[in-house]
Image (cartoon, rainbow, N blue to C red; front, side):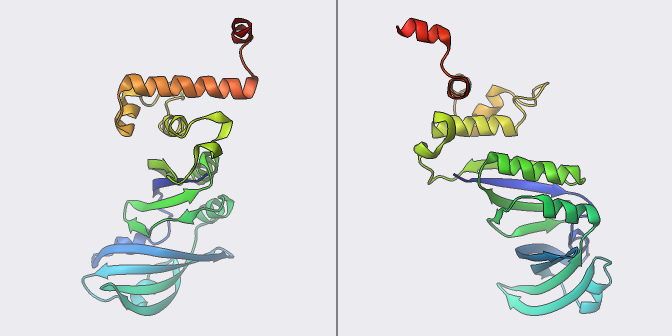
Length: 224
């Protein structure tokens, strides 16, 4: 069972945000993040720019310590950059669980936009908590289950649809106090009616309680 999360990371300490702010840059994408070693992260980036960037221009940014001009691909200049991470960012990256990059990271002056695949929702929450503990804001833009997942693999006897509804509700703050969203807003995201969303959540919650605490004594009595 896996989930794919589309996220927006924000922090002035994020690597390569300074590159995206250069006036000649139209777009920066990072299809590959290479190994992190002693606080240095290596990135392969594709840059769409109005003019070529020199090695000196990159090295003029404090965070970049090494530049390799790989060439051109898909009409963009490709570079390998060695970047010194800030301590908080390095700690956040080291403390997060393994997650696969689904598509190229889009790097903008406002932060990183990326899609990651996690083994389950708790793995995503570990990632989110670790980032936020190190001053990196994590905005969850969307979250979906792997469509190939069979219902038998969903935990606690939940149906796939119930699990999807619970995951969405949890990610949007439905179970926080005060609530950060409503059942109607959740229903709009799943393209179902508000009564159907409420019914999904009620059935999912009942199934979770039954699976973890056992059936209600009242139900057992009625069943006899």
